Length: 197
Length: 116
Image (tube, rainbow over all chains, first blue to last red; front, top):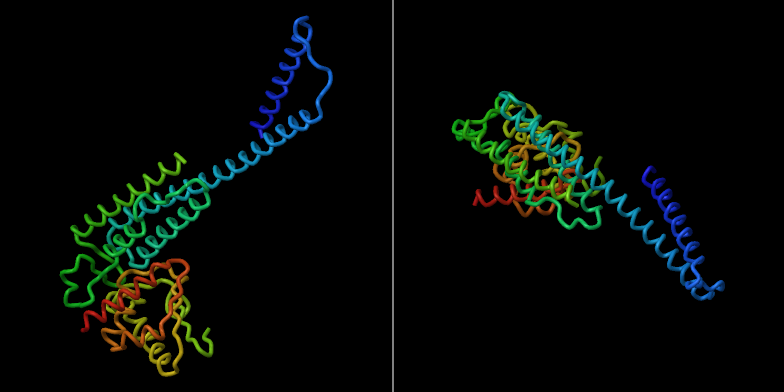
């Protein structure tokens, strides 16, 4: 609203300045202006003004809409970043419940889908995530929630679950950390990509 | 809710909104329990009555890899259902996480390969 008011104000100042300049030029003896207007030229001028106003208002609306969608996508990408940071903290705390881990992983997937949907709405954005986010998410999920089929192998498993509480070997925790770092990088690149759009 | 030609199983309504680990010994709401108590009997019924079995995956707090593998891979591994029969009757619905459907079919195929 403020921008629009100042644009109107500046347009009036410019129109006033043009009027003053034409008035001064009219007073000079060697410069003459015709007092008649060719109707065809008049129509052409009005048409040009109409097209200029129409195009600028359409473009402005499109740009406003893109900006809103870009801001929403960026906010969603920030939520996704928060989600993965929370998961990184959560996984290092011992005795977490398997269903809580499942919930956090699902939340991250749903947020990534939400970002992708918003990016598709912005006309000139061609790419979503810079890497295969779904693949990274699947790898992380496997590292965090896949236990052996055979109970005999369970003792050597990097992931063990007892009474619904999950625990990881130190080695598996490192693998999870590395995968989470890759996902964080992917989200960071996405945030830069959206901000530059 | 099931229809004349279709049996519907909603995991969130018929089993749990918070699916758990792979095995019963690992904790509550396991894939093993879901397979034994709900899935395998429904598969048997669907094959007997020549109906399709629609599994609705939406509405839960999320699935671990092991839960789904144990539930669906276990149909081949422990309950001795045939891959060709499962292809005929099983259908999945997942609006929230559509990639799960592909993952489940892969689990079923892998279990079938391992059994050969």
